[in-house]
Image (cartoon, rainbow, N blue to C red; front, side, top):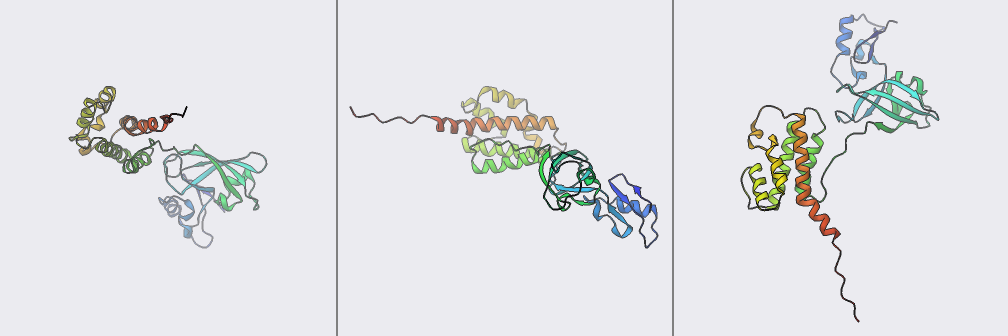
Length: 263
């Protein structure tokens, strides 16, 4: 039987009961699905590598069929499995431990078709770990909900507009809670809060340097750059910490006044 290696990590195997051209086999193997196991089995296309079903730590796609490229025994039925995401093409590594159910040998695990959890292994750790969410403490519920959406979009390449919109909205709602009487566009309201000593002058100067705080950016077609988004994220984080987190910390750490003791 002749095997043809295809670029996306599958073997094209000629079907034993029918004649299939290489062109048909390539078309079946090139279907844009996340797992090659489902690509044209009627044409004899099968998955020739182990699959790790997990959240990609780079593009953050849930339940992605990460394809293995190598495996190494670590002793004591521990295994290091090196995988690549079929969506973003970035690599990662996982520490697997035998689940005691007749595991495939670590040195050949990567070349065994099927999910690793069905091949006798359990996931211990994945590197790199997915980025953690950075959310200021003690935010009002509505501000926290909006800011959480911004943080979930922030690490994903291509979601810069969504993240920027949510950071701006979190600031907008937070400023309305602190100073409901202050109106106008976002950047102007920040300046008014500086004049009322509700924000520091340095934060007001910083706001003037952040393009994404401008009112026109909400109507622009061009996608914000990663650098612009990071600047907006850092600014939003500090403003919300100054308005909500620090006052809550001060209130919590104030020593209660002890009642006078009787002589």
